[in-house]
Image (tube, rainbow, N blue to C red; front, side, top):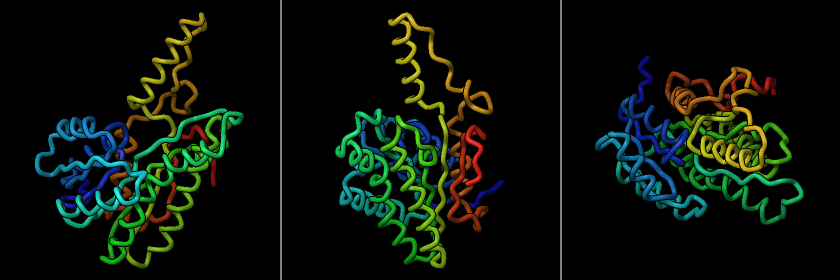
Length: 261
């Protein structure tokens, strides 16, 4: 299927690894030009080189926790490739903590890490898209915003706030030609998940406990998602084939959390 993304300028945050990097690859395969944004310059450069996108790839190392830095990065990306047609947000992750360990500072840190890293790029981009009368934004958020997990309350709250912001911005800018959607992945087989599994296994071995179960064992489909599976949905939502999909929050945990709201 031709998703009509050839030549489009796609800016992806959190693009140096995991879902963000998989999205970059998927958009390149559709013929788009891609601006990669992440905090670690070395890792980001390696990711850009590995994509083999030639002159269709640019990369910008920045801390999206700084609103001014986010705006400067948007300016630099648009100077390189022209106006951003598609924004994909996949940057930032809040640290987990037991409820008894939470403090006001940790609640703030979770919002800074997840919510504001998205908002700092969304705010100027959506306004520019609205002025031009066209654009698509896809936010990769996470199922933690729908579940009151005691170990993920601060991060889950940031996710929930992003879900509401996504739906609200979709309604606010719909008549100006901008669509805003979100996907909520469950566990995804990224390097971060693999590293966490290895740490858990080593700790269990050192303590004489059985190795933890594979994360896929508790999933309805018997496995966790692959990054490219999440990326496929992101690319579709960004395309004109999804021209009447707006304000959607799409769960992607393989029906492990079978909710209707």
